[in-house]
Length: 95
Image 1: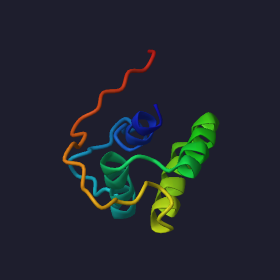
Image 2 (image 1 turned 180 degrees about the vertical axis):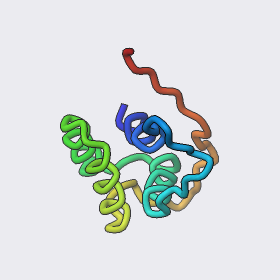
Image 3 (image 1 turned 180 degrees about the horizontal axis):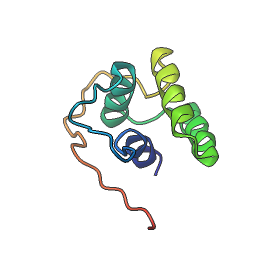
Image 4 (image 1 turned 135 degrees about the vertical axis):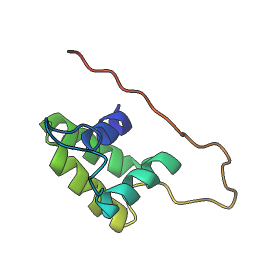
């Protein structure tokens, strides 16, 4: 749920917005890439749950960027690299 909400926050556009012309924030993109590659740390999971409860997508994105910059977002790579990687997710919302 946390990952889906984080991704959804930056893939949902307001009316009239052309996503093909948009330039994604590179810091947010890096944090989301890390989120796909590695599991969240326990502290990051707690922080993102609290941010999700607020329903503030900008705050969530900023939190992910700060945690990623401080190396507290995801579990660091171990001695062996896991070859499995998530390449696509689907989220569902109530309309």
